[in-house]
Image (cartoon, rainbow, N blue to C red):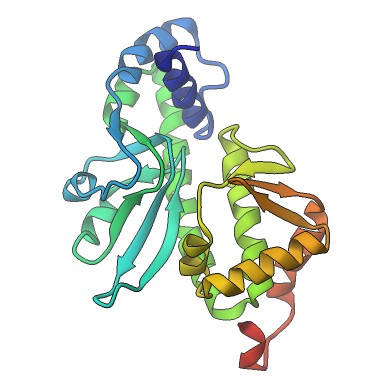
Length: 247
């Protein structure tokens, strides 16, 4: 498969997550193909400052981005992740002075106005509605992340985050019910979950020993998805009274 063909496939998967793309007409594919050759590209490790300086809305077609805030002493809090099918929009522009967007893998973006202009009228409406839903989901995830760090136990935090990743990646055809790629280190997970890297390692080892989840060579395998779901659900069901139970 050529790079252009692979890029267009990623583009179509991102569209599919917005409620279109699964049945694109041949003429729509032809209109979108030039955009596949002009995607904005960022290498892994880039601090994505340019998208933060504009209110132009971009759709992520491939790659992983984290939104974080860095402290003067080198510590970092990761607030969340932007994946294919997510948007970089004015919310991030307003926070440019404090937060950063970091490309964790090679990332490709398409400008939403150009994408919409290439679609037929009826498809444009579907995608516009999908964009609104995507923004709502991104806002909801911000509250989920706050709740996860503030109220969940360590095991619940890991379980909840892994289920979130699977759901989001399945929406764009990048995960199955039992596995998905995870280009994150234990340090990334620690900075996301408010834990130490050692504690994250301990939780992952526990989940692996119990036959529930395995993380190896950048791939998560959910050996017992229902058990993982029960662990994550417990965080919303059992009130915590002892602060020491959380860490």
